[in-house]
Length: 429
Image 1 (cartoon, helix red, strand yellow):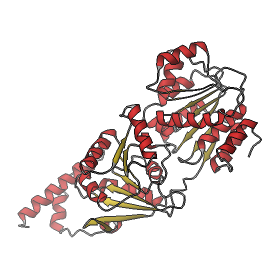
Image 2 (image 1 turned 120 degrees about the vertical axis):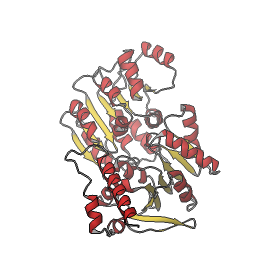
Image 3 (image 1 turned 30 degrees about the horizontal axis):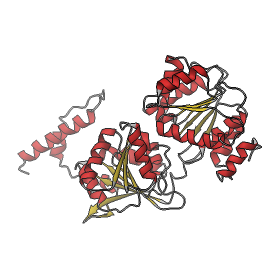
Image 4 (image 1 turned 135 degrees about the horizontal axis):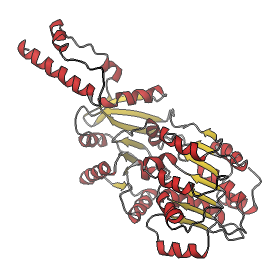
């Protein structure tokens, strides 16, 4: 443990904070050395305190100007960081002005207060920060020492990175920038090149990626509606607590309504809900009032939910790293976890990628409300189709183009299938 200020030590003792996590061990010394950082680390790794502890250690409590700015993509995550920050600040003999700026708050009151004084530490969502820094020009960021961009991949995914860019552009060039993310998508690279100076890249391996505690089951839809397949899957399990992931709020709404109709004890969590409703749902989840939660990645990321026994991917996320992140929420602390994903033929390459990265997958079918072993995908793909020479000649009449356009393969296969069908009809088959 570093030689922290007395109030920080007292706060850590009260929080029973004894040993540094891996991300804290690697991040904190680099922050103290003033280096820009790009950190990839999973939820629950302790990254929030990895930037909060150096912030409080370097904070000048007598300087009543904005010194540290933290951007977080959702209200819930911003509130969680604010709570962690207050847990430390409350032990300081000198008052520390920490303010949170998120959507749905009292904007006139915030503006009036900013006109009177500046906070020392700010945590906020990108849109709100842009409003106060760029549009209103009331939040003075010129003396900010460290700018933290938390959950950068989610910030990018939700289209908020441009707002962060506007805010960062208002700060001094000598600014120290710390970027934290669960994944490192290619589209975030321009932002990193623009604002990070000779950054140190720190990657904390996702321990759950190859965790033996998680069973990864894949259930093929076989052309059936996903809702119908999900209903069958739900009959095969009795989870302690399960999260059902959807890629969009529209599909999350549909799954939630389906489960309500089927009389499951279920909650719904996505960005389209009002802030008050989201807060109620999160409180209900933490108080173990639900057995199921239907959610999108936006609202599930970073929210600490213990004892998740099952993860169900109603839809596979576009990025394979998000699959690892989703499923890594179960099977923690030596507990067993089960991840069940619905897939179809278009997901074959996706699953190949997961398997190439060390995930041990199993293919299941549903028989009499029981998940049973299904045939391995590779075995299905290796089936040899018996095609006569005459049929081959018929298929060859479909011309192939040298320019591959979107949807070409599907159109070509459709033509082939039609010719096969016509040929077989002529042959009386």
